[in-house]
Amino acid sequence: GEDVEQSLFLSVREGDSSVINCTYTDSSSTYLYWYKQEPGAGLQLLTYIFSNMDMKQDQRLTVLLNKKDKHLSLRIADTQTGDSAIYFCAESPINQAGTALIFGKGTTLSVSS
Amino acid sequence: DTAVSQTPKYLVTQMGNDKSIKCEQNLGHDTMYWYKQDSKKFLKIMFSYNNKELIINETVPNRFSPKSPDKAHLNLHINSLELGDSAVYFCASSQGVRPTGTEAFFGQGTRLTVV
Image (cartoon, rainbow over the protein chains, first blue to last red):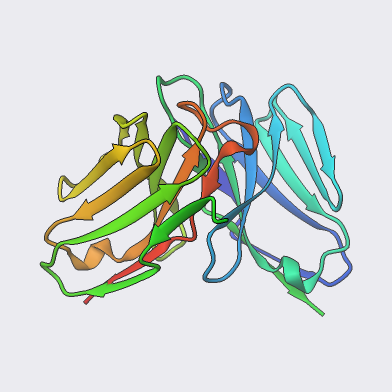
């Protein structure tokens, strides 16, 4: 079945790096995503990675993909208080005629100054 | 310009009422979705439409009826509202039947509270 797992909470100090981990189950997922949700706000697409890539870097964000272990991680360098939010990992399985994003339960990142 | 817009942003209503949430996207996408986010922040797909045709219909009570008058709009009508329907409902859109790359855009959500 489809299932995306994430740890629920992460607490870091400002300036440190944050690493949010995710495991997924469907190896057919062509794209894997990270979304950010700030309190009371919608979902913002942070970054995504294509399944034939191992790593993708975008400014302070680094995504690592271990396809063998079905493990995805998001590293935020120099974490700021404005990074405090819920981060959702999502997969997009392609083994159905039409499908949608399957989300993890979200990791709440708390950044203290 | 807002890419995916939902109205209303907040909706408070009594049990048993019927209500609608509207969604519009100006991205020229073919596919639109409704997701539900419960009180524990868990997000789950409800429906998906591609070019006005229903392509995903998850296990959702039939009190929920999506309607797509054209490919830029996907509305959600809910009959006989129950307390358990309280949640944040997100509309999203993408090009093609599967979200790929940067194309899965979400609206700001509609917070529905049933009292």
